[in-house]
Image (cartoon, rainbow, N blue to C red):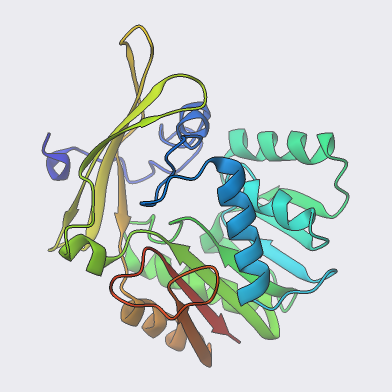
Length: 270
């Protein structure tokens, strides 16, 4: 399958865009996870939430903006650790799911609101802004990506931290540590079949996912396209937005980022 020739709707990431919704929610719960070492969802949440707290040097009672928050797994995990969370997303299905989950857990310190991250209006409110799990680079226009970072900068208090986390990096792609076709086992009992590829001209990853039912029937998600930024490119955008200090990690434990790192976490300080 030539993924790079598949038509991608520019608004694939919206509520009605066809990618994020009930099928994505099912697909996200695989036994393998997205890294080389298999990890189920509970392990991933624990590791990622702990990493956010550690790398952003957060304390109980700090205010955190999770943008976009998706269906709330990081927001809820952080709220359970005593942080005051505002989760924003444009997807109504995910927001409803997150609100119901927070209510079930009786979390009073976790609020979910509908916002387009290109149009945030928060000013000096948060101790940290987090952008988790390969959630930067949705938009076709790279000026929109910069608008997002600028909005994050404005949202932070002086000394606040902006954390961006991704597991898709250019060095991994160039080294061949990048699976273009993969089948994962889901906790639902179904399979996730995914195809993806990287275009060196556009600097974008193109992908297509299918939920494969036990009957063999395939439920297809809309194709997606993501701009993949290098650490240097991303830091350049942060400098332009006004951030003054940067740390780049290759693990949630705080190891320094290298080309061979399995993930990349950039922490920028206002």
